[in-house]
Image (cartoon, rainbow, N blue to C red; front, side):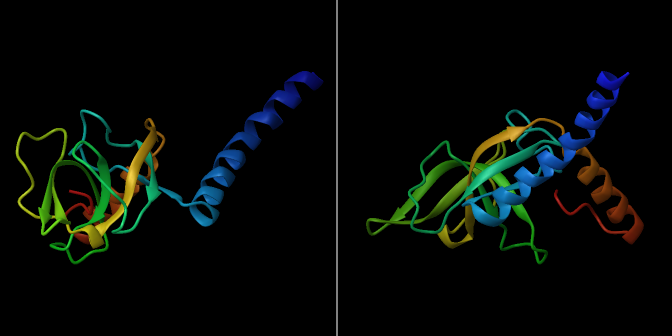
Length: 151
């Protein structure tokens, strides 16, 4: 009986440990995370996955094939997008910006990503643990009569 009680107590502490790891990553290390709420990179990263990314600034050297997290200048909301770099655009021996696309699309994005808009470089993911966030996002979008935040 005591062994069963110990196993139950240990299972209750697992979410606390996972939450603590996320908090430490977010606050103290040069890493962060976000939940994927759209299928634009679905060949690599799926809806509901939580990705981890290294926080970077415009001086970081990026190359074709890197998956980046960036702010979209075209949207007024503070939304971060995750796409793959398909072309690095140089101007006078400096990086002017990046052309990106989602892995689920054959088309290059219609907008240009400037180095100042890039916030991170993808380093890994945990599959499907972000579904509660996706559901909350859909509920809020439907409740407010707005479109989804992460299209």
